[in-house]
Amino acid sequence: MIPQDIAHEPSWYESSARARIDGVLDPGSFTELLGPQCRIMSPHLALFDLPPAFDDGMIVGRGLLDGHPVAVAAQEGQFMGGTFAEVSGAKLVGLLRAAAASAGTSQTVSAVLLLLDTGGVRLQEANAGELAVSETIRAVLAVRQAGIPVIALIGGRAGAFGGGSLVASCCSRIVMTEQGRISVTGPEVIETNKGAEEFDSRDRALVWRVTGGRSRALLGGADRYIRGDVASFRAAARDRANPPAFDIDTMRAEQVRLEKRLERYGDCHDTPEIWARMNLPDPAGISEIDDAAFIERLAATGGAHDAR
Image (tube, rainbow, N blue to C red; front, top):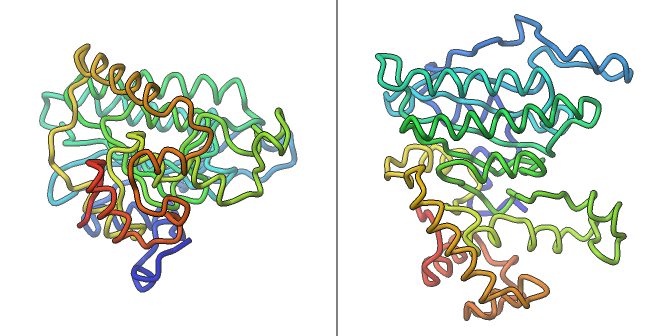
């Protein structure tokens, strides 16, 4: 899945949450809040004979991006699938509330960066996880209402599924790569409830063409499509273009966009049919082309892209 032209650069997909933070922010500028040394861990995992993590898979703090202060939260997708739970959710909500409260003060942050890598709610802490997602959504909207953009960066192993996709959808901007995926319901959940004939979670081509970054960018579910290296994420996070305001006009415009999308593609049964209607050449082979070629095609359609 990693394009050859960036194989020599640090890969976002293969990096840990802490390495992603270090790659996005100015060197040495990150200050972590409630780090591993505080040992604030899940009180529930021991009941299931599962090992906890000292940071519960959620890293939060502040740093600088081109000298501008930003708040950052990064999920570690390799711990419990980067899931939302009691401790991880509280850390994220606390960071967002602090960012909103900073508006108009000397501590104002220029943006909040959410490095999402999550399968959704942690099943062992389902009630707390569901509450965490709802409180996170409310906190994201409060930050946006305070005039601070919230940018979702998605390109990790776990993707952004379940509650993570809802959080991402509430952000000012979504940045994705080919490796990134976003969906309300994960492939395994669909297969469990509807059977493999409805959605085969083992069919990687199916999973990626339905939930992957390229399809999301083509359909407007992502605002930016970038290459999968850490440097590309830093460049996207540095973008100072004004995000859409959080107001009724923005929501009405989004509703109109979704209605037009349903009108144009609502009868399609698979994404290659959508690509064909967009007059993309050889839509069946779109997953085989490299990022540079895809970005050119995406630009031709008027879609979101970042050619760096």
